[in-house]
Image 1: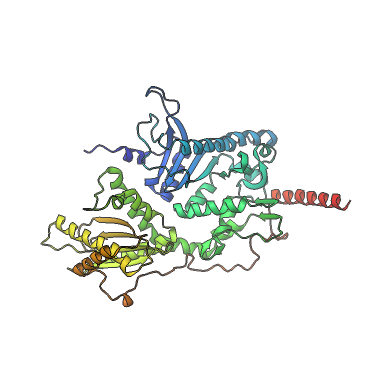
Image 2: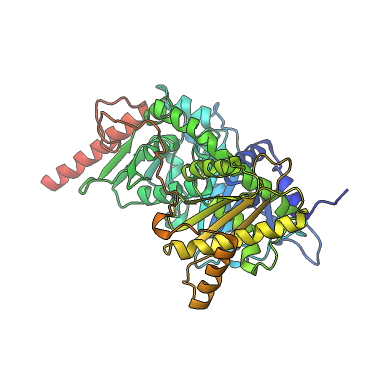
Length: 516
């Protein structure tokens, strides 16, 4: 039996506590196993090759230039103690400590990217490279478990129990404001604070790296805006607002009108969104997209095992297996829905002795072309000869598409036997086409295209698939005002009413001083 590689062993790690295992399971479904690593360590604390390393974070996700750092802490809330004592105790242990750990981890990773390991003894380096600090984007995410029920009891009134966001709170100011979080770190460095409920809601709703990162970027920009007072009733309320707000075909958060000095998002949006027929239709339509995830995970298993085969005579950049799979995983959920269906269609085409190619553009990146190629194996051909023939076709399609469609800057190509074959293998190829080909290279590929009968349809008659499909098969139709416009008659919980009353009194005092 073959011994497992260090990368395979790292992929089998599940976390050391129940809560860490739950987080790892969620993360690997969303971010996929090639980029998700629980319990990573630095070599701090080791001396002379002895001792254990220091745990940096409970979960590390490295995806190109994006790095997500997760801290996961389960701290029991002392509900039998006065809230003025219980809250600061819990906040310091669950949130403040996590925020400082995350900030320290970011600092270390930026300075020492080659001193990160996936095992406590620091023998196995992190298998994926950390990005250049000059281009890296770090996101700090604190998962704090144990306070959800106490939050719901404190606010009452049917509150969902999520910790609220209040942009007036910084550092020690949190101690006197129970179950509200603003900026735990100095300099208002953003920390995304989730609990045992909202972490699941977020990673199940935005279950790809690009979808989640787009949300985190938008959220940090929205909540970090220069607004006098901003209050959000919980992470899930902000998420629902984001999912239901579109601009130029992309999710966003509402633009705050000029002159508005307060923004309040009350409870109710998440409940409305979750029960909507639009979300139900989206989730049903998304089921097709998980074939794309399965394809990535299947190929990733060979990459980790060191058994992924490079294409013959391929340039080095085309056999960077992680880079190829990262291109596939960089597609958001909606684009995966269309790509999976296109790949499935290509696999279903099977005419003896005839190849079939389906060309499509990424719904998220119209300069990236995909080619799905199926080639039936002839019965009198040995497999090595068949694979070399299929590889030649794959290279020709990937380069020939640049000659036919000049705006394409990169091509991702997948070749396979069709469904009708008893056995199948897949070849993956990524080609950077950002630079135009010179005359000699263009002529060489043009001749090869003629020789292999690739893309020989006249250019004016040739088409590729670039259809835009709706994310929500049933469109939203909001009858009420935009979410950011506060309606005093809208139902709110008691905490929000108390907060607004305090703010109203402050504004009244300011006005009296100015008038006086």
